[in-house]
Image 1 (tube, rainbow, N blue to C red):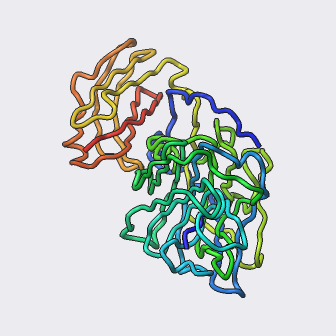
Image 2 (image 1 turned 30 degrees about the vertical axis):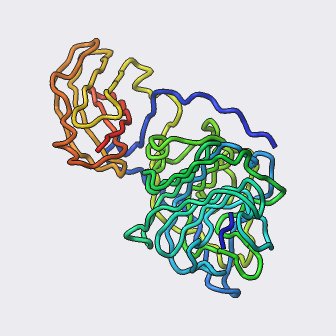
Length: 369
């Protein structure tokens, strides 16, 4: 059982990203009771709920990214024990049976595999890809799926885990609603997710691996370029935080949806220059992608002591260099950062933070094995 308006234009993403406040303050910014996720209880006909978002031309995207944090609690309801699993976010053709149903569907199964189906012709043609099995399927994971007209990709916790080539043409769209936590196919294939879902994002462009990893732990403002719909579920609401009006509503039994704590995200300023850059503090690291060595150049607006910290995507500090005092102007650090000594053979996205007195700037980099 393999299911499967005009988009707003996007602008070029600014070079400078201010990554998590946790990297600036060395601690996550907790949000307390207002930072909530939705918990869907889908264990049977007497306990079932999902979210419905009305169809809109904004969701008829020919290039897109779908993201969410998930944590599975049980096996789900409606044949979600099979290989396809339960839906996280989907634009399905409801109440029918077959394959390649709807426009797109991101699912997560009980083995801990993320799956992505994109459809070209309803019930006939599409693409279906899946990630490898995760070692902790009941853990909290960030899932993302991208489509750019040439390929479909699946990312788990900010790392690409699967991809497939697309040669079929346009993605098919009808009048179907967007569903979170269900697909509602016929003869009981409801694919309803049992567990927590948080920070659901729909973009009208295919985001890169570096972008996904850099912002998956961040709270967005809702005004980011290309962001069509955003559901942080904070303060116990289903409101679309972009202001585009794509608000969700509970379908099924209201008592089977609750707002619970999952894990706090940190404050971010995305797609805008950081305050540090605006005041003259600059940082560049090269090459990127890098293998074993990283050269660092920076510019200071005034004399200050300089420290460099290298972090992984979870916010763990991997290396610190206290470089000493530098005068105002451009400099190259007299020693390179030895990535193999700091990271071993681990590849992925990392962040380099430069602290100069009371100013901070952060840059992302990609490390190759």
